[in-house]
Image 1 (tube, rainbow, N blue to C red):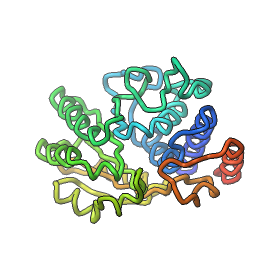
Image 2 (image 1 turned 90 degrees about the vertical axis):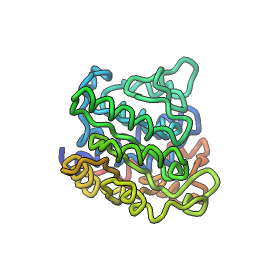
Image 3 (image 1 turned 45 degrees about the vertical axis):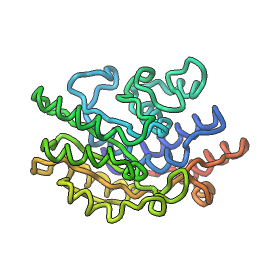
Image 4 (image 1 turned 60 degrees about the horizontal axis):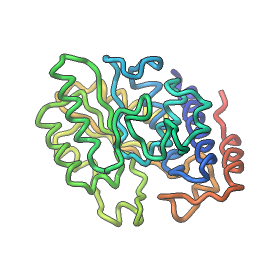
Length: 276
């Protein structure tokens, strides 16, 4: 798939997310808009899966460690054809398969329940180790946040992955420098983040997470790296990417969107729609 086609997929993911946010009038829309390019490249370039069989044994696994990013993953699953588009109208409602925080028991394509932050990478280590022992060539992609780099369990998992030479594990860090109490680099800085991952024995890349071409190259390099070690891609992303008036909001961890602003957000996103 070409980079322009991937950009269109990212645009669609953003649009699905905004439409879901409008259903409840809330949601972690800033993160969904920011990480849409990463999800587009993951699902439409890097990963192997069957849309009509989310439990296909030979699939690559995509683990959402950051449970409150569920709206972003639902948008990607809709775009991938794993979930029907009309189901987004049920987002966050009673009995929906799309609860506001992701739960594996509810949603096809949701591999883990990731509400307790800091555990996704550890689960990824277990899955990757299990796949190795089954002689499977499937990969495990684990999306985690920069805030989760302040969790000790994340670094225990990183150490374990290197110890077990899990070259089938690809960590993806959404580094948007935001968490509930403020910028993550001011709360408990992980910088120099690339050096830390390298010190733990990982193959490391750091890229602009809103640059499709850079992401494609990074995912290709991660998959093709010949060493027997886990890989991580640190993606610097911009909260609310694609909706300029939301990008400038001072508080961006949980963006407040007024009722009349959801349609305006769609209009702003549509104005920047990728053209072939």
